[in-house]
Length: 343
Ligand SMILES: *Cc1c(COP(=O)(O)O)cnc(C)c1O
Image (cartoon, rainbow, N blue to C red; front, side, top):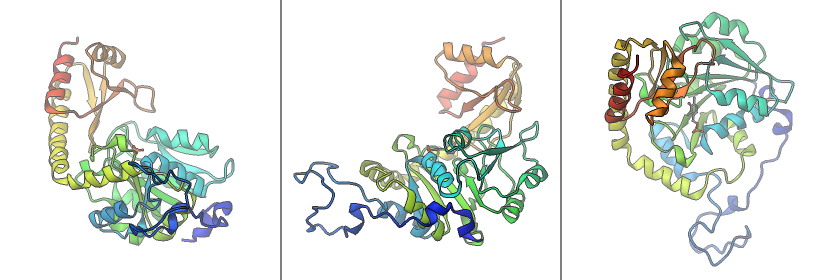
């Protein structure tokens, strides 16, 4: 991969930004008169570690990569934006993604004024590999979401391999829901593909959406460039601390994830049997895309009963569809009982 041909010239020429805190070694005796903070101090009077050293170390151990291969962002949403700004000159370079997929890709592309080409999924929301391959040209960024939001289906490894072989730019695999699948993360193949970027997040399976912490895993030369353009203090000190605490609770999270996977199957089976349900799309995530006879009426009735789901009926091939997050067993029972009273 010729990295230089993928990176925006203005970014390539940018000297590394040196934040006040980058020279701080961490020694307790250091007198820090560099960042105009209030010297009397209280909790969080100091700027956070711009490199998130401890957190990246822990994530590296957990995911069996090197800390230099990790960028931590203010949620993966920030990283999606950083990737666009790293590679795409507005109104000139193009991005490729599938449709329907995660809404932030198109929002972020629009904000950055980067044209977005969307390859429609098939009617059953599976990927038409040939159509994707045919659409690939000089795109600086190809955004793939697997499992895909809003349906929850996985993109086959063979499809991604062919995309990686043809892509001229970065291939980003958004693995926000990877822990709910029976698949290996693409992280294990990071060293095979210098153009590969894997996104993961604390927001879903790790039960910490409020922290706003997401990760990009990639070749270290790419991560270095992302570090050059990220806001220096993009992850707050309490968020870094709380994220480390989440990683201490991994046994509990593992149990919760397994329970959610089990509940997904039970809920899918029960929904399929309801007369008002036309289709439950296959999902390896912690949500189900469900097609109803009258989605709007179902949405309103659920809302009337205090249950909020996501209306996806206006998305490509999603007519009549609501996206329902898997809840606790009690929440899922409440949902089913409420739906049984319809029609
Ligand atoms: C929820 C979600 C995210 C998470 O974004 P954060 O900013 O990390 O909370 C990323 N990608 C997809 C596809 C999602 O559904």
